[in-house]
Length: 517
Ligand SMILES: C[S@@+](CC[C@H](N)C(=O)[O-])C[C@H]1O[C@@H](n2cnc3c(N)ncnc32)[C@H](O)[C@@H]1O
Image (cartoon, rainbow, N blue to C red; front, side):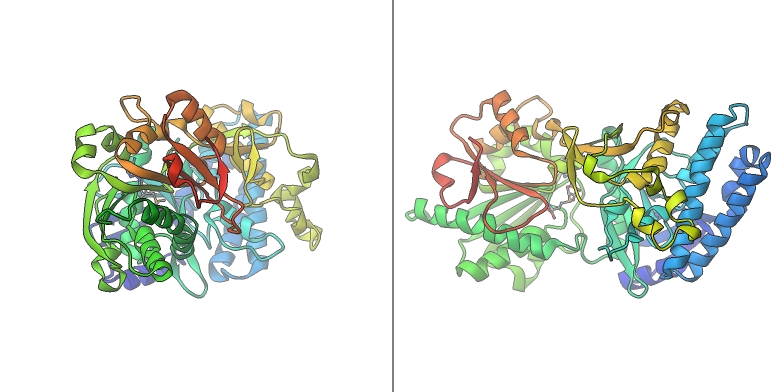
C-alpha cells in the first residue's frame, strides 16, 4: 500500500499524479481524513486469478504478455497516440478473444474470473475509511476504455462519458460515469469518479466521491460558471422581474431553498451574476440541503460573493424525506424559489440492453477495436471507431452510440448474469439511461412538486434526464392544481441539461419556452 498524504490539495494532486504513473495495476483508492491511499498490485499478482483459464492456451498467454508491453509503453509515453492505439488494440483483443474462447471451449476452467479481471482492469474501488458506501474510479491516462474514446479521429473534449460504466474487478456492481477531477496539468491527468448504479447503494456511494473530491479539488464541477450564468439569465432574471411586479408592496426579502446543493457554488455564483445584471437584489437567505455535510467551497462565506445575502443555513438530509416532512417545511419556509439542479438525475436508472443501430450508423463489425485498431489497418482503421459521447434518445432513455464498446458491455452482462449466454448471439448492446419517476415522489408517496408548491413560489429543475413527458406524466398522476409549468427552450441558449420551472400561472410570464400545463 502506498500512502499519499499531502498537506494541501495541490500536494495531494501532485502525489497522486506521481503514483498514477507507476507500473503497478491500481486496485483501490481510499480516503481517511486528510489522507489518500492508493492500493495496487504487481502485474502478475493482478492476473493470478486467471491462471487456470489462460495457462492452457498459449494464444491467451501471448495476448496477455503483449498487453503488458503495450501497457508499459503507454505508462511511459502517456500522450503518444501510437502507444495508446496499440494498448487499446491489445486490451480489446484480449477481451474479445477471452470471451470467444470461453464460449467455444466450455470445459476450460473458470472463464468468469478471467473476464472479471479483464473488464475490471485499470478500474479502482473508491472508499472512505469509516464511512458507508463504495464508488469506482479510473485514471484517465491508463484506462483503455477512456483512451479508446480519446482516439477518435477529431480531437475530443475529455469527458467521463468515454467510460459510461465501470466494474472494478471483484465486484458484481456497476458504477456509472459522473465526474472527472483533474489532478495534474501537463500531461493532463484526470481521475474519473463513478457512483453505484444499484439504487440502494447509490446515495452512500456519493460519500467516498465527496471525500475524495475534497482532498484533491477546489471546484467539484468544472462547468459551474457557465451553468450559473445560464441559470441567472434564463431563469432567475425573468423570475425576479415577475416577482418585482407582483410584490412591489411587500418587504421584498426572499428565501431560497437549494436541494442537492453540492458545494452551494452554483447558486452562489448565479446570484452574483444576477446582481450584476439586475443591480441591487432583495435581501436574501439561502437554505442549502444535501445528503453530504457542508464542506469546502461554500461560497457565501466570502464577502465578494454575498450579493445581499443575509443568512445561510445548511441541512444534511435526503431531499425526498425532508420534503415529506410537513413540519420541517412549515418551520423552514415559506420559500420564494426552490432549486433542484442536477439532483433528480442522481436517481436515474441504467441498464445494458440490446440496441438496434440506426441505418445511418453504417455499423459493421469493423468498429470493434480489436479489428479496426490493428496496425495493418491504419490509417483508415481508426476512423471506424464508434465511440461518440453525443446523447441520443433510444428505448425511452438516453444512449451514447458507443458501439465499439460492445464487448466491454457484454463482458459486464456476463459477469452480472454469471452466464455466457448473453454473448452468444453477438447482438449490439449499450447502456440505456432513464429518468426515474421515483425521484419526484416522497417516501410516503406524495408528489415532491405538490409538497414544494405548498410552501414556495416556484420550483426550478435543471436535469439531464427529466424530459417534458416525465413532468406531464407526474402531473397526470398527482394533479398539481393551481400550478403552471414551462420547459425552457427556444430562447437562444444551447444547453445539455433541461430546465423547467413549475410555478403559479401568473409567474410564468417572461419565461421563454414550451408551456407544459
Ligand atoms: C451533481 S451534484 C449537483 C450540485 C449542484 N446542485 C449543482 O447543480 O451544481 C448532486 C448533489 O446531489 C446530492 N444528492 C444526491 N442524492 C441526494 C439525496 N437523496 N438527497 C440530498 N442530496 C442528494 C449529492 O450529494 C450532490 O452534492
